[in-house]
Amino acid sequence: MVLQRLQKVIAEAGIASRRGAEKIIQEGRVTVDGNVVTKLGTKVDTFSNITVDGEPIERESLHTYLFYKPRGVVSTVKDDKGRKTVVDFFKDVPYRLYPIGRLDYDTSGLLLMTNDGELANLMMHPRNKVAKVYVAKIEGQLTPEEIKKLSSGVEIDHRKSSRAKVKVVRTDKKKKFQIVQLTIHEGHYHQVKRMFKAVGHKVIKLSRERYSFLTLESLVSGKYRELSHAEVDRLKHVD
Image 1 (tube, rainbow, N blue to C red):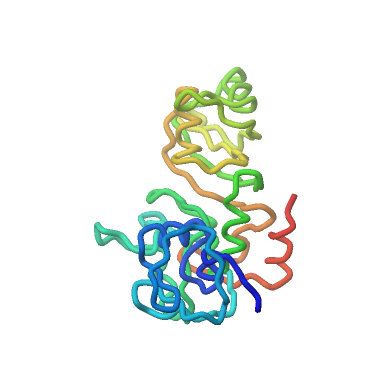
Image 2: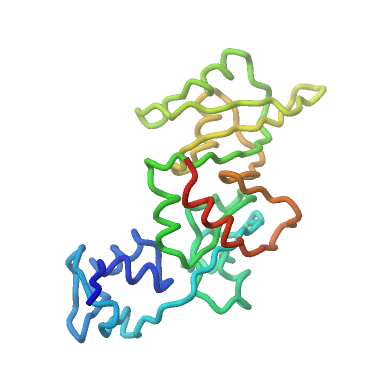
């Protein structure tokens, strides 16, 4: 008999990420063989009768998609304000997908959608410093000193951000705005916007252009493509 942690079984069934599965368990929404289980780390036989919100879970084949998220879309499965979510773009996909991490409502760009809980957990874990490349249109222009501050890390909410790679792509002739490429390895709330704010610049427009080795090449806004097995395997072994 093979035993696995309950949250791992739920994540692999495509219900939620590992972290999301833990929350579901703690909320008392999971039963195993008819008994409510709220203790994290509980080990179960994967052939046990496991339900979430009264519905038996079924193992799905694992799939991950690279999605070009448009602006004005929420990076959640559901939205209590009735706004369009990233899941709405995958109505023809027969799997229960959820986003790996988030992009702000008004931020466009590369977002991974998956039902692979192991991959989601791996990508979002702080120790796995996945490189994320953003292109921002900011008010004004960065000074050499401000670039140096961003490169070495700026203070946000009494903590210092990690080092960033800064590249000025284009400066408006009238110096009203600047296009800047920023590479970071964190994913905190409003991370990029707050970093620029810390050095005195407002972000007018923001897009994520790269996630690890993945880019938006050949995609247009609102479209997606499925990652190959080789790409998923490479993600799981990114240094």
